Structure formats: C-alpha cells, structure tokens
Image 1 (cartoon, rainbow, N blue to C red):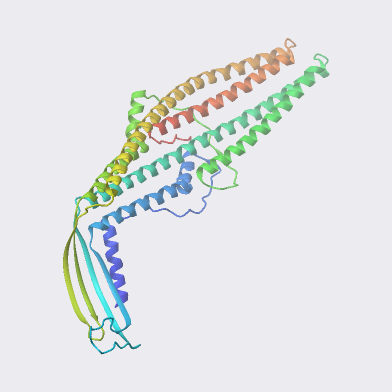
Image 2: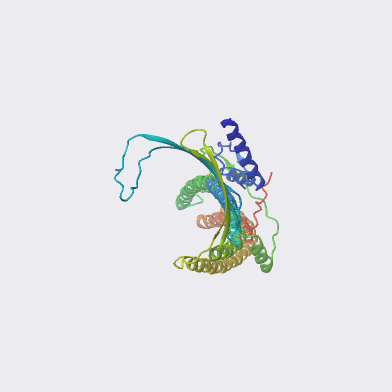
Length: 450
C-alpha cells in the first residue's frame, strides 16, 4: 500500500510539473567526441561548438535553475499539506501540589506511551499580491536566463567564426610562404646559372641564398601559426583533438550593405542582452510590489485532523481555522526592503542605459570596420596582379642582363607582401561581417564553398 501511494504521489507531481511547462532547457552532459572531417566547414565547426562547448552547459544549467525557482514561487498558490506520526514514551508524575494537603507527591519511573498522528492543511487565501509578484519576478528572471543563454550561444558562434577565419588566414599564408620558397629557389638557380656562365657576379648568388633562407624561416613561422590557429579553433569549438584537418578556403564574399540606423534598430530589437535587460527591469519592478506586500495582512486557512491517545483505539479530533496576520511593526524591515528594491530598479535601468551606449558603439565600430575591410579587399586584389606583372617584367629583364639581383628580390618581396595583404584583407572582411552580425544580434554563419 505504501509503495502505491509513493507511485501515485510521483505521478501527481509529474502532472503538476507538466502543467506548468517543465524545465525549459536541461543542462546536458558532455557529449562523446565527434569525428573531425579532413576538410572542416564553417557550418560543421559551429555544429561541433554548439554540441560540445561547456559554456553552453553552464547557460543551460542556469535556465534549469531559474525554471525551478519559478516553480518554487508558484508553490505558494497551492495547499501545503504535512503529516505527522509520532510515538512518545513518557512518565506521568504530577508537577503540582495541593496547598494544605498532608499528602506528599509521589514520583514513579514507570512510563506510558502516547501516540500522535495528524494531517495538517494550510492554504493561503489572500496576501495583497505578494505571492503573485514573487512569481512574476521569478518568471522575468527566467526570461533573463533564457536571453543570457542566447547570448552565450551567439558568443560561442562568433568566437568559432573568428577562429575559423584566422585558421583560413594562416593556412593561406602557409601557401604564400611555400610559393615564396619555390620562387626564391628559382631565383637562386637562375643566379647560379648566370654566375657559372660568367654573366652575373657572385653577390647575385649570395643574395639569392639569403632570400631563400629568409623565405624558409618565414615558412616555419607560418606553419607554426597555422598549428596555433588550429588549437585555438579546437578551443572555440570546445573539443580536444590531435587529428590534423584543414578548413575550406574562403570564397569571394557577396556584397553586404546595411545603414547605421537600420543596424542600430536591429541591435536594440534583437540583441539578447537588450531582451535580458528589459526582463531584468520588469523583475525589479515585480520585486518592489512583492516587498510592498509585506505592509499588508495575509489571510490563511488551516485544517487539522488527528488521532491521538495513550492506548488503542486512538481518539480522533479535527479543527478548522481562519487566520489574518496583520503586520504591526517589524523594526522598519519592510520599509528598508522596499527601499532596496527601488534602488535596485534604478540601478538596473542605469545598467540598461550603459548597455545601450555599448551596443551603439559596437554597431558603429563594426560598420566602420566592415567598410574599411571591403575597401582594403578591393585594393589588395589589384595590388597582387600588379606585383605579379612587375615580377614577370623584372625576371625577364634579369635574364636579359638588364637588371640586377636586388631588383628581382624587391619584386619578389613585393609580391609576397601583396599576397599576404590580400589574405589578411579577406579574413578581416569575413571577421568584420561576423562581428557586425553579432553586434546586431544576428548570427548567420557564412556559407562555405562546397
């Protein structure tokens, strides 16, 4: 019978939880490591991060905690039922005496049992909105937690994007450095051939050897930077892996235009921080009402049914009561609690003004950075073509004996610099666009080439 009652109680609690929606998001356990593809796309990187990053489990846990706090606040609306089962073994010695009596009080060590079994029900009837305000505050705090969880998601995504674009950049710089080494080797072979033919001085060979050594050093640095960038991306995705992989090369980005007014309007409407801020303000307002409710009476009812006695069968009793609790003086506690709640609202609104200014600054900076990156990308593409043309002309002149090794070195270095600037410009543009999306509260990962 007892086991059946436990089962029925569990089902009842489950139904009550189900009626109020349950926990919004449960904190998941860490997932098993997923296989990393040889060529990692941006979409796959974001997917791995959303499945594995521990900060999202923290945010999910905070959501679950606040959902439970809503349920705790709502419990004040429901009856509170408590059962008591007790057996007391006691002596029955008299504690009083009769004045003028010659009979002395007698004590004995014998004991008798006393059985107490009761069920008490208490129900809040009216408290001038105090419990309702506490529930409202808890629900607004849950909205805050939900918005903060969305902020955590956006931060994880944008960090993955930045790390992905950085790995793209370092990979392409490795390619540029490898091409530079190949180019300087060709120059060395050409200088050695011309020196053996007696049409070029020894310094041309030495200069070409120095240039090749510098290019090889740059290649070592570029490869190390790529390894560090891969580790950084792993960290952004929340994974640990020693499996080598590469990311896709970037494609030419599509035009992206948005006005400052439109960007600011989107940010103020969509940024989860702003949504969280509005919920915090409403929670602070509800907290004031909850504190003010302590100035007013509370009306409660109670019922008690008991079986008591020193021997079986026990004697039953029942009682029903209505109570009005009137606060008269609490040492100004309620007054100070209301003052604290009002001050917290003023502070929360001030934080909202600071947040608005911060978002406005972020949007402005992101727009300016995007425009500058777009202009640099246009220019660097032209510069690469010019540098290639210049190198071809200089090499032709050198083969014909109309130029020297220094001029060839300058042309080769100029091409490497132009290619490096073009790689950096592409990555900067992608990163600037992702940062603008984040500033506006829009997370739309760039499409990788398939």
